[in-house]
Image 1 (cartoon, rainbow, N blue to C red):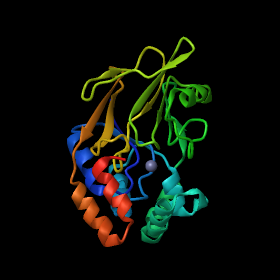
Image 2: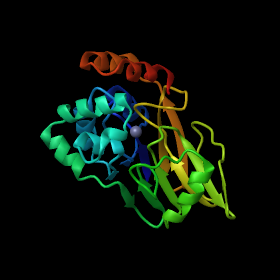
Image 3: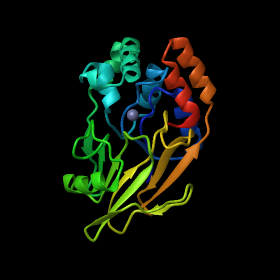
Length: 242
Ligand SMILES: [Zn+2]
């Protein structure tokens, strides 16, 4: 089975549509959360994903923020503004739907999915090997897929150590050999210095994950953000991937 794994769409419909277009044929979608927040088309993104019926679809901190499910006083001012704007925009139907999403799911003996981390699914960022090392004790499957950082990454636990193996874009990475925490990167607001939308295709027969980056019409999203009156720094950052 070919699984399209996406995360952190952040209401960026141009990016989502380009990913769906370039991913080609896949069997199901696993979405690791933050469909909304930051970007200009929360309803458009939720509607697009709902139509595609992801097999698994998690809630992230920005989804919860837009639903009023968490305290946003910790958010930076721009994120807070975007969360409040998103809250106003979401239709009651889409809000109700987002409210039903889990923050963590055990798919099988092989895969656990969490938005942030298996330890703290909504909030924790797995950005380094130390944080990954602690988190390996918090799931009992071979692999855990996480989003939230908007930075593509693989952490491998092997012989009691955590390593960060290299991978090549477009080339299948073999999942076997140790337990892994895998982050597909962000679709709608990449933060690794590469503005292209990021995703992985997971092949459960060959047990491989292939990272992809795609260019999309960033300007299209930026124009819509301006029209919506979203903060200029959020608009600019899309050009740079930070
Ligand atoms: Zn996010």
